[in-house]
Amino acid sequence: MVMPAMSEKERRPEDDGRDFANAAWSIPSYVLAGIILYGGAGWLLSRWTGVAVFTPIGVILGVVLSIYLVYRKFGR
Amino acid sequence: MNALTVLAADEFKAPGLELFDIPPLWDGAPYWLTKPVVLAVLSSLVMVVLCWSAFSNPKLVPRGIQNVAEMGYMFVRDQIARPFLGKETDRWMGLLLSIFLLVWMWNLIGVVPFLQFPVASHIAFPIVLAASVYLLKIYLGIKHQGVIGYFKNMMFPPGLPKFIYFLLAPIEFLSNLIIAPFTHAVRLFANMFAGHMILAFFSMVGFWFLFEKLTPLGAPVGVVGVLMTIAMTGFELFIQFLQAFLFALLAAMYIGGSLHPEH
Image (cartoon, rainbow over all chains, first blue to last red; front, side, top):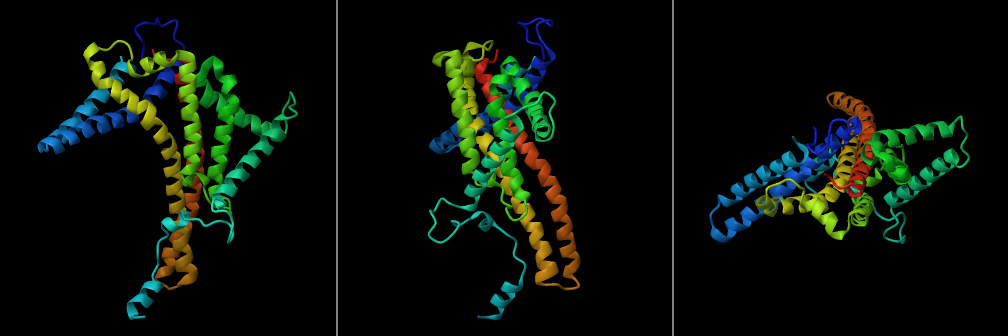
């Protein structure tokens, strides 16, 4: 994982280790947050409108958004 | 009393939540004075005595207790603190070593004969530790990055398309400020809780089928129970260490994240 702003020289091996550990411990809590937030919003929408399909749409949107966030923060 | 209740009393009953429902030490004792509280205080005392005897009069060439305690120190420094704190490692070693040793001792008490109760299986104890780390994390974040800077760095990581912040900032907020401290406490609690249940179950099987109701058919089941108790105790020793390690590691990660904003 090389950040675009830094050259190879400035990065030490322990930085990679830290980034990896940070990412590994953050991913579950991001995905959980995404599911709770957007799944919850979808569930509320389903209750108000009576259209059941909003709940799964919200859950999937939450997973997609949180994985996108993890990818942009720790990936590349 | 009918035949059914007689039969029910004769049957094996797996241990359940009553394992964790602990009354005060004696009749008329204050309601908070229970076994886990005594064990928690005992753990702190053991840890204080250990560190005091190891480090109060340190020798250049360590011997005896100092040698053992230095191994623990080196482990915490190299495996837990350094990867996340870098140059600031030494400032935080006191806290991280205390957290690691205290949690490990809380967990170890779960398999010490007669004491045999993992303190962290009452969720109040991990909650207090996790909440302390959580408050420290927010305090350090605000101190080193400013109130606005801290929340800006947390919720608006640079380099994303503008409109997407609207969707992602709530996820960052929920993940960092609510789910992270929650899982920090629950991970330790749930592991110790489940481990205690498993050990209690298998030792109950062994006790019931070999001592309470010894029958030719039941005896092999009892033997399996005893063997599983031994195997699971070994496994539990590993989990106890692992959970203490993870608890301190996450504390180091949260502190490190507050000192240096993620880029």
